[in-house]
Image (cartoon, rainbow, N blue to C red; front, side):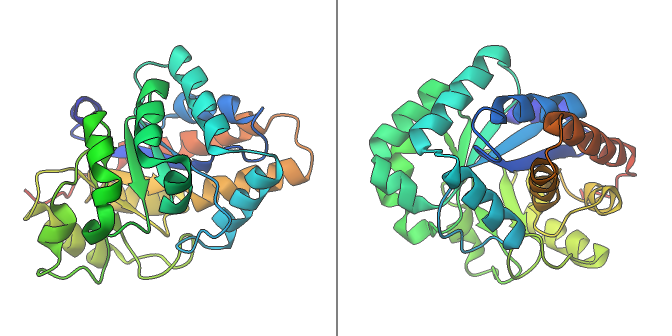
Length: 270
């Protein structure tokens, strides 16, 4: 992960999210490759779950499509393993909720995720105070535990969030669910500056970033930009109309995002 951030510097990295198995497990490998071909620097692959409480309608629908297609955590790890056999370089992070991990078994999950080629894990609903059942197993397998900071993470709580965090710090730009509101530039700049004063981890900003213009705005201030709901919407809409080349549509959209991120003037605080 550190090598990828160093390799793209001084520009921001583009992080893209899709739901694993959406719209089908058969298409997911091609979609992952399309993300990379379009210019994504880091991949987030969603672990489908029936109650994705932090996610808005777009990613909720993606989760339901994936579950309806029969995706399980074991099948998702097999998809990752196949992707890793073709791409040994692009960091891949599993993002989701703790319930499927607990059901799978935390130690077994960490072992199998590492064997498949996963680089890190984001568990949205796992607070630091309750991470002991999962975090040691991830650490034992060399997997990053990527933590989230939000607009309500104050200076007193921030050290707890940062303790044990690795890979990068994910800043949730807005209070609320994914794909809803967008943060103003001044809010993003102030939040990133505050976080970088407390950690040497790269700071990625997501939630509410949907367009190339919004991605460029965030890229001016953050170490990485995360785009998810807009890509999940594109996949859902393309699948619903029976598009012949869903990965191709993903590739074209991500290319526009990547071009905007790479052209963004840097205003990152020292």
